[in-house]
Length: 599
Image 1 (cartoon, one colour):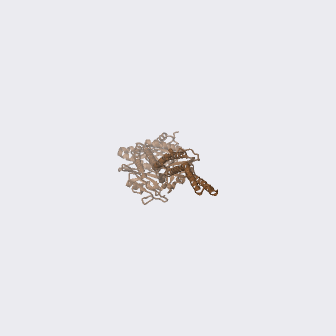
Image 2: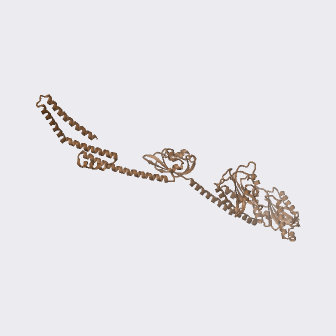
Image 3: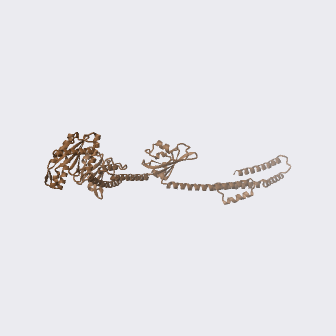
């Protein structure tokens, strides 16, 4: 466009000069005395003008016309390329002709235009290819981020979220636009980390931070509705054009936590069951086994139980007897020591042989007392192949919801307890047979020695006197010979029963064999007290016995030795008590005496 205007201006100027020459010639012709006539002058001027126009056309005009046409062609080609970003086939041929025919600046300009168009076209193709590839990569990246099960976030050094995946929006129960420009620290619960600590841990420590990835960290995130949920967070720092950015990968581990807790519960359950099984084979009395078993059950960490409970065993008269308890009120210890089937929750569980659950005190609680606190119960029958052995009674908080997982575990516990109880009862029977007299049920010689050893050790610690008695029945052989051994056996049983009534719970009566018995009287206070107790025994045994309509009468001779006055060992105390008993025998029988030290 610029070159066309210049050519037009040049043409106008040339024509203006020519006209000016003609005008000067004409003026000169009319003002100076004429050499020629007017007709001649007009002819001369016209001829000159014609000659000058012909010369202009031959020398400059045609060149100017071609130049204008070529420049116009270049202008049109340029407009065509700018408008369409390419040259049409109709435009390429004139441009090639122009390059081939013009070897001047116009040809150079046309060649430059051709190279420029080729370069632009090539660059445009490359740009289109890169744009397409970028779009494909972006689509692939979006597809990958959307297919991830984990949430993806990108935020800057200030913590402002610049990008979030669709999974992230779903995880936090919002739209993607709701997260953009928010601070990432708002996504985490203050119950997990202090907000200032979050900021130090999550955001880059300084602007020129090197690329760095934090180790995965577990914590709590918070949804838009305020609900908290467990997460695993990984943050990577990176730089672009001198600016620091971070990528956060957030994984919702709610299901994983459930599985972990379930695995942990299963592991704890196995430990508890194993501990109960180990208790079952320990050489302990059944009551002690059940006390330890109750402690194991109450300390299972995931059970929502109060630290209190009890275990009942079934008695021969179909009652429940409390044999183990933890932290029960004294009123309960008295009221629930011996309860019938169907009474209160434990009795109802025993009667129905099914679990009874209560989340509060209700009309099923037959045992109450002043000041009782609100609570609930799991009462589970302890069954062995359908046979009721006892009841496990556990306490829960008031309005505690029923949990089938708790019931399933406690049912497994009671099944294990059934085995422990069954073995414990068998062990107790065996132990009782080994340590007790089969006829009277009293401790035998073996158990008596063990008990006396323990009492001697206790007396040594407490410095309290201890009495050991040796009892021999008078005229027992005559009963055996006249009435028979069956009556003699009944007599021994009655002797044991009568003697037991004269003793305290802390005292011990044992059958040493035949018609010989032994006594342990701990913490007697003084020797006179021991003499008084034994005198009552002699008196009650002197009264007649009625055995199967047979009346018989016997007596008893008792010798006593005192600890530490008459010995500090089991053997010496028994030996001295035996010698004192023979003194009574020699003195007329049916009496009591204390060992006298030989001078």
